Length: 527
Image 1: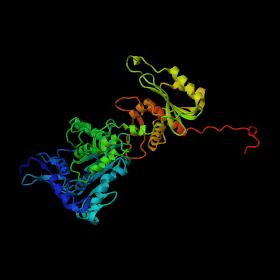
Image 2: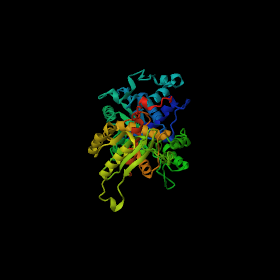
Image 3: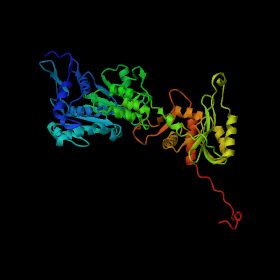
């Protein structure tokens, strides 16, 4: 037997195979030539030890959005179906040679392209379909593949590939030889993604097959499959390959933030995107600057940083643009109100909002700084008096209250002021609160929610972050719901919560009842 070369990989042969049979996804008249960066990843993934065993049993590509994860995995999937991807000895020059699944006594290729929804399986599956059907289906014909929208079959021997989702139920025991786990930052326990990942890995393990994940950066703490793989790699679990390149967090010694120059943002992006020449970095900078792009999304999807699922709820400049400093709400005006209470650590806020969306702090109680705040507690009697004064001064349609630790007082207010006082538990009723936050953010964006410009409101609003309430929800899905939460800096947001509740009250409260004037009160000459 020839002595194996020092670095042995089936990837070298596969690069030639791909260029021979598959077209470029950007020009079907050109062969598929991976960038050097992508080619090195492929070569490492198919690396063999001296006994001809693969060094890696599973892998993960965590790359920036648009880097090219899906097209590369589409090509790999086709190779796993029809190419020589199983070690079949050493050549005379010491290089390894392979054979396809389903030949020489090997079991047939059985490939799963998995995601938590049908739409997400399309990332890799449809990329593979288009590669095979390019040039009137020439690649499929040459490789002997019957390529359909929902399944691929080999024509000359058993072998198939298909998409599968977490909702399809368990595939425990299926004779899988290769699995693509697509967008695993979205695979969680809640959507059964972690269960599907475990099943697929067990299945490929039985036949000495392998699995590969594609993912964007994950949100730490969500418990996603992507996060689990990351932690396994950190613990030094053997047999896992990781392909991840992040943008540098500092350019020329300066931290990359929302306030960075366009040039620094582009320089950081250039590192993350590497040789992906098809990505227009100037366009990405424009997308990052777009007011509708949350900075936390830019951090994860473009810079490839793992970040917590929080981002600023409101752009400070946008909030300042909505000030009406000279407006006075007259006594007797119809208003909604919001109350967010605490005992000592957080602030307590009572916020008013007119029917046309103008809000102001009726009163905010904040813990004093220094020695004065050591044993400070919210003065509950003052809160009672201020609520009574509000109901006396204005026509309050609805008062929404966040009730934790204030249930007794809220029940008293309900007895005094009736059904106008409603509890909205921002922790226990997250879906309802999220819909109120959605209305509030829309009002700020559209300019229908204005305010008096008070310092306390500014501090609390700009300290608020948004966090999605369903971990499995796709950030790009317009139906995804968010609540506002404190940021990691711990700054107070109680006046912002009160403002959300006040705006919701004002926008949803019933109109004021019109006073009925007896006919006798009118002058006979009046028309």
